[in-house]
Amino acid sequence: MSDNNRSDDRLQRHGVPPRPGTTAAVNPTARLLSIGIPIAAGIVGVILIAVLMFGDCRPVDVASRSGAGQAATGQPGGTPQTVQPAQPGPGAAPGADPGQGAQPGQVAQPGQPAQVAQTTTQASGGGAAPGGVGSWPRFRNTNFNAESTQTVGLARSWPAGGPRQVWSVRMLGPGHAGPAILRGRVFVLDYDIGSRQDVLRCLSMADGSEIWRMSYPVDIKDNHGISRTVPAVTDDYVVTLGPMGHVTCTRTDSGERVWQIDTVATYGTKIPGWYAGQCPLIDGNKAIIAPGGSALMIAVDLASGNVVWQTPNPSNWGMTHSSIIPMQLGGKKTYVYTATGGIVGVSPTDGSVLWSFAGWTVNTANVPSPVSVGDNRIFITGGYGAGSLMLRINGNSASQVWKIPQNVFGSHQHTPIFYDNHLFGVAMDRQLVCLDLSGKRVWSSGHTATFGIGPYILAEGMFYVLGGDDGTLVLAEATTSGWNELARAKVLAGTDAWAPMALVDGKLVCRDRETMVCLDVKSP
Image (cartoon, rainbow, N blue to C red; front, side, top):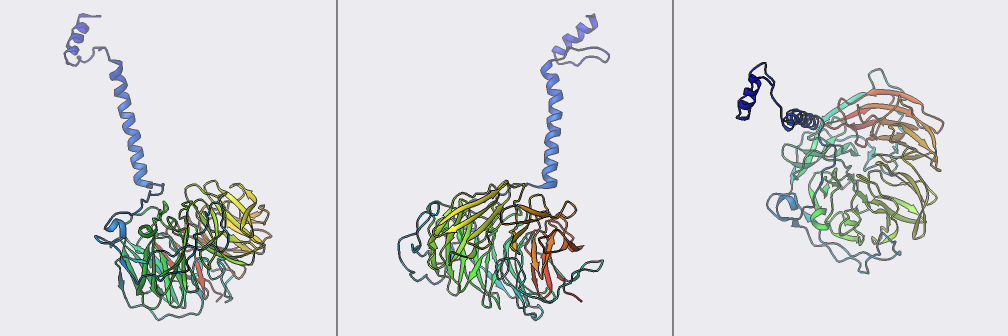
């Protein structure tokens, strides 16, 4: 070592840097830190950029609202008000554990009085006079099969620009809530990100103008959308289930609120990760809801808000995104629901458990609803590796007929359509698939006709299938012989076109994350 370098080495030990052109002894730890810190900083920067660009793809962990004030009631600084107390219902021993099955005739105890969060009803006015005669009054339409009940002469081909757009309405906030339609009025549950409120909007089917709105405060953040349920509507009442579990009954003509139940405060409902996706059911004069928590299912009188019956839930099965579907099984009307712990059949008379099947669960999100396929059989499907299965109901028991893996058929989001003794649905490979009732694929639409996790409905022997990624609408022949595309057109400008559609009087209503449109699909 030269004298100059020795001198520099001594100086460096005292914190003096070496002169240019000399060689210094380098501490190995310092060298590793000098290399590792910039690399680590770069990795963190890339992660932060990705989060900013793409957001958090995991569901929000929605905690139960158990305190006072807004977190507990959906309103700032108060407890829920109470409507007229529920009248005593038929008393009897609670039903048996849904995980083990219960005998018919076991009656659930009535629940607590319906609870009302502080709300505001606003008659906006300005909407066009309703017109039209058809209806699509709830999730999957009147017969729960996603098929139009009308024959109006729908077009089997479209002009180059696609079907004519009748109107377009900007939503108040991002979401996937689908429309219910009754006699020229469109009902959609929106969320106003400015005022932080759930908003039920009544729109004119003629021109999309707003007739009335009803709202109540709920503080919530966007997590791949906010509102995502379809209202149920009759001549007198509209029932909605909000993203944080508020069940609200409103008058159809005016938007006046009749009653509201906060399922979290009343039953301890655990809201699913991407918020409530269960669509409410109206059956006769009752609203039927599956809150989970202390009551697996409840029936509420529409006029009074009184809880008529509730189904016991000793196994603590929770709410999912799936909806309650009425079916005729073994000569009995049955409410069939896919909860977090399995599938259950409930008596509409008293809420007792008729049968249960604990052999079906879906990781992350259980979304599609059960499908009745005749002969006391129920088709169940799901995403996230669940695949599909066929159940058979025999008296008070449910047994598995067959089960198929996800690569044969599984549905991430939408419920398949049973038509012509076959099942049709968008599979996990994003193709529309035809299945026979033994679980075998008959045909697929192919890689040139994929639909993301978009919705589909059936009308006049044709499927309307909406591309969930880009808003392209495809018209195809409903047949078991193979995929036969009739027309396609881009009808929505945005992304995440996941909401269920509705078709009434030759007008198709669909939406993406931000905008709802009405299309004229009737023959000229």
